[in-house]
Amino acid sequence: MDRAEQSTSPVLVYGLLLLGIVARLVPHPWNATPLIAIALFGGAYLSKRWAIVLPLVIVAASDIALGWHSTIPFTWGAFAATGMLAWWVRSHPSAIRIAGGSLAGSTLFFLVTNFGVWLTQALYPHTMQGLWQCYIAGLPFFRNALLGDFGYTAALFGFYALATARRPATIAAR
Image 1 (cartoon, helix red, strand yellow):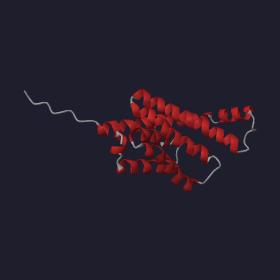
Image 2 (tube, helix red, strand yellow; image 1 turned 180 degrees about the vertical axis):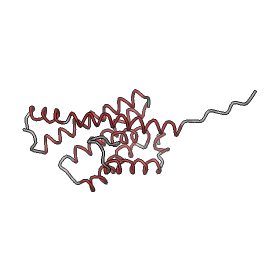
Image 3 (cartoon, helix red, strand yellow; image 1 turned 90 degrees about the vertical axis):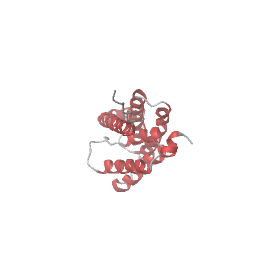
Image 4 (tube, helix red, strand yellow; image 1 turned 45 degrees about the horizontal axis):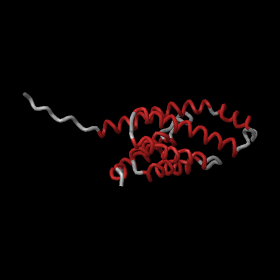
């Protein structure tokens, strides 16, 4: 059993679940939710099982309210893959790895979900040019995702680091 499996707190898991579900249901800029950050954080600090299960439970619960769509396999898969991507962060958590994981998760989500839109919907011709058009049309959403993912990732990892930091020992007065 690794360090994360031993320290997975039910309060932390339920808090992240609540944050993720509520954030998807309240009004927010397109693609600016904490889900990539939660998947990355869960993969880095919770058990490997929770790295995959946590984002999937969040999207399943919120998709019940938001509605089912043809790109569910792509969105859900991208979130689960980000949880697995976080295992790279877990091995040596650092600001560079966390930022790199956030960028990789955002990019992965953009590429996979836009491919899903192109493949499952009739918005674009099913040609390489149509796929390219789909990616170009998704760039404003990608910008929002990058900003949201970096912000939420910094907040989650930062607050967790502050909350779990060891207090310096009291220095005896001379």
